Amino acid sequence: MASIGYAKDYFLQQEKIGVMCRFPDFAYTDALAEIGNDRGIEQGSSSYGGTPEAPTAYAADLKSAWSTWNWAGCWYGLLTQLARQGYDNVVALQQEQFAVTLDTETDALVYTQLPTYPGGLLAGQRVMFDLTQPTTVGGQAQPIKVMLNGAIGQVPYSPTVPEVVGAIPFRRWARFQLIFGPSNLPASWTDIATPLTSSTAPSLNEINLIRKLIQKWGPSSVCLGISAIVSGRMRAWPLRNFGDGANFQDSEVVTWSATIGSST
Image 1 (tube, rainbow, N blue to C red):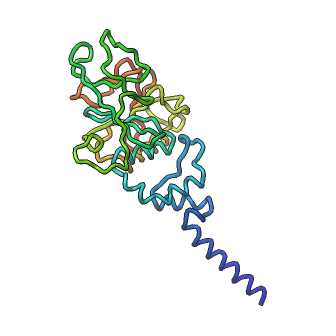
Image 2 (image 1 turned 45 degrees about the vertical axis):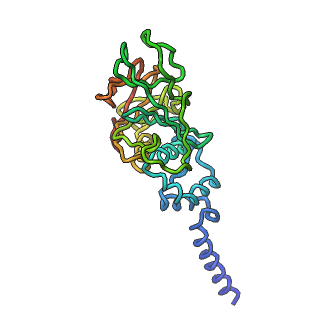
Image 3 (image 1 turned 30 degrees about the vertical axis):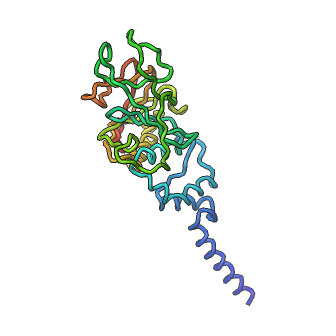
């Protein structure tokens, strides 16, 4: 009878564990990935292949998956998921007027309006500067300092504020690029090159991760690419040629497509 009882107790305990593994607070650590796969929330990391998010923090993220998915399809959703993977200073550069970043200390979006130069060297172009950019370019003064490692002249926006139709944070544009500037390149990006391979840094797998996050969480706009500014401090473009890599000025830039699996 004792032997039969031990067997029943064992299977009862396994049944309890099976039920508990469906709940983030009670699941074993190796079960969290399965819950995350079901809820579409990847475990965070300090960067690709870096220190993974602590199980307790990941469990909290999984519990809030339903509210997190409310932000899918907008800048806040995309930039917060990139930040969870260690890409916390990336810039989403919209086709018209705005560069968007996430203030990870306040958990707020930051929109910086980009001015158009009236004439001279950069006539008709909108310009994004790093904060380390000189005060003049080709003898022409900057109208505003914009971001690659934070910004001044920011317009902070909290995702808890109700949507106002037509307000800046909710304007949608057809095209954008993700930009990593020289002051916010991940430390592991030591061999920035195209075509991507398994041995470049970032590798094809890492850029595919970013591409998948864009596809899953990004706005319903066309991403024209992921650009890493290896050196230099400025990006400018004629509006008619948005996304043209040749429009980077005073910079060495590598740009990869947003197509998952592409080596370029």
